[in-house]
Amino acid sequence: MTPPRHDGPPADQRFLTPEMPQDPATEDALPLEPIDLEIVASTYRAIVDQEAFEEMIANWNTKLNAVGHNSMARRGISRQLFGQLALAHKALDTLDIPAENDPLKKAILDVPGPAIVLAPNGRVAMANIAGAGAFDVQEGAFLDPDVIDPRSRQDYAMLCRAANGQGNTAQTVLTITPGGKPGVTTDSFLAEGYLIKVRGQSDYYIALRSLEIDWSPTVGPRLRQAFGLSQAEAEVAQMFFRLRDLEAVARGRGVSLLTVRTQMKSLMGKTGAPSNVDLMRLLSMIASREVVGRRGESQVWHDPLGREEQIVLPGGRVVAWTWMGAEDGMPAVLLRGFPMAYILPGEGEARLRAAGVKLYALSRPGFGNSTLDSTLSPSDDNLAALRAFLDHKVDGPCVGIGMSNGFVPLLEEQHANPSRFRSLIAIGYTGVLDRSGIHRLQLIQGTMMRLVVRAPWLVELLAKAGHRMMRQYGVDWYLDRAYRSRPLDMQSCRHPNMVTLIRNACEHLLKQGHAAFVRDLQLAVAPVDQMIDDLTVPLLFLAPTEDGVFDERAYRKLETRNPLIRVEPVTEAGELIFYQRNELIIDRIIEAAQSGRSATVAV
Image (cartoon, rainbow, N blue to C red; front, side, top):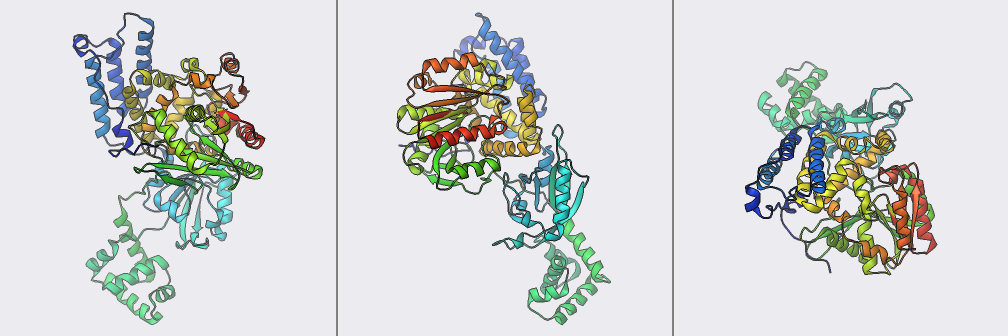
């Protein structure tokens, strides 16, 4: 039975409450060590300086190494150091996030009207709320080319070719006609199209932003007050501004053309505009002034496939998921992990559909729209959500696929209910199948994994600072720091088509704040050794050879521990194996689903 949901403040504010160090009487008398002073200084700098974050991580790594190699080193945290870090935590809680420096985010927020940003392949990387409605699209989905007016499609095609490095059209003006789509009644509007180059990436993004000036609710009253217009004259002015045609105004108001012309003559007399053109300029100027300072509102994460389903458990807990492939196909369940991967590229779904496989993508607790229960441990929380989903949606044994630490709940459920899965697939380094790999992780990930065992609240502080930087500078800030020493992953992060998928997966992780990230670190160090030894279904471990952690000798020991485990080294793949070797992964999922054999895949 799933425990009731714990109501309270947002997830990333209500868990991991800092606790004072043990034996404070002894620690009070001890001065701050030199490395402690460096930690405090870099922590405060990391609040405002994007370059100081890595320095803060490096200082903690130094302290951890000193603890590990010096038997005389204090293993606790002094009260003085704790107090300084608690103040830094409070500062992060009270400070607003500065203006966006992410060039894609700025493109959609710097205008009050509809705006979207596309990858070169047409997938939506960013959209403000108005843009999602006007272009009828969600972030992570593909823009339907039918929203481009037929007269503008050649110009749009030229812009797309230029984004892919095959032309020189840097900007254009397009007519957008979402009203041409069934069930959509939004009026056509003009939009500027231009290219955006992000530092370090290979191709260009495409920005589409409305050129129409919004007639805000304050414009009409402003006109009546300034020029003494009647209510009817103000309404005619608004319709003329929007339609630019007197006959259309007459039809819209249900009156004769003569009546509209009479009202227009009165309008021009009161405003002093000698012609229709001059009146339009005046109305545009007033409408523009009313929207000065207004910005577009950023979207929150939505399922880019538009298929999300949810169940609400007793107590109000929400478990959400989407799916890819064949709607009535053989079920397989995918749980994502640390890597920023969630949705398959378009061609991947087509292959699943042809093979008759339905791949469920479950939003684990704290991800997307699935709520977390902070009264439960990360392991129990994830297991409760997985069981609720399986009980509700999947009849009989299925294939379970886990990316990175997303494999842990699958392993725990298989141990508790051996008939639940036919087989498992683990994709990528999990932190579970080879504990020694934690010491081979990159500096940021490795330091946080080591800290989360000793002091989860410290990791929460580091994650909070990193989350602030990502909100200010965009996901590229994180990708550069996570993968700069991994050439293959860094190369993948240089292409807008792939980064668009990564951005969406990042928003999926951070929709509810940074709590899910910290709890995932705790999940990765869950005690599961006995579960690996007792595994009763086949497990396939797809191990990328270029992730900086790969150690075939260590991995092969798994096969000797349990003969049901098979390790498959995957070349030309790093942490982003889900996108780099997408075809291979789909092959293995299809094989497992169709074989009827028990198969466990670890990603």
